[in-house]
Image 1 (spheres, rainbow, N blue to C red):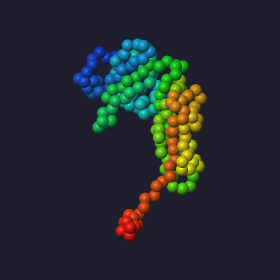
Image 2 (image 1 turned 30 degrees about the horizontal axis):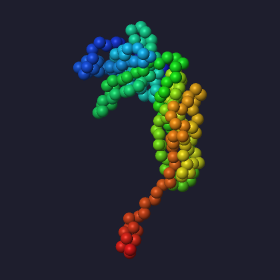
Image 3 (image 1 turned 45 degrees about the horizontal axis):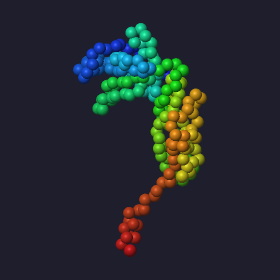
Image 4 (image 1 turned 30 degrees about the vertical axis):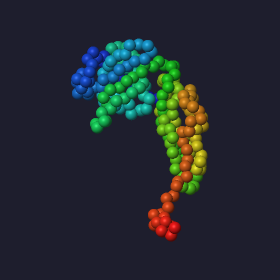
Length: 194
């Protein structure tokens, strides 16, 4: 779990025009809320935030006018064409507090010999973890699995201090047999003979 420090500035201007001015200055408008506090509208340095958000469930240490706050990203809005950040919603967290987040599921290993397909039913797994110890991802071994096999959420080994926040019987990965298509020439000949 990486923790990244960012200097934030509070903002008093709102609306599309103000947001455009902020983005022209290479900054990103954001809102910080949580723990029953009033939402705080801030601006963050654009490049540093872009780099920070490359890490899934990154923990941000925000310096807001001399006050330090911990936050995690809740919603990130990007420009559809450029991919640049338009706006970020952040949730305040405290050290030791449990938060519910989604972590990516990665597979490793090779299936049993044969023509099989691996279907990732869930690409992310909803888990509950301490805010300062959120795993970046979980790894699932598919080594030796054959068609018809499936891996449920309860079968995945989670890091210490992390618990499932979804139904433990939810299918995460399943192995399917590959369906071979009948060659077109043979099917046309069979139809003509019938």
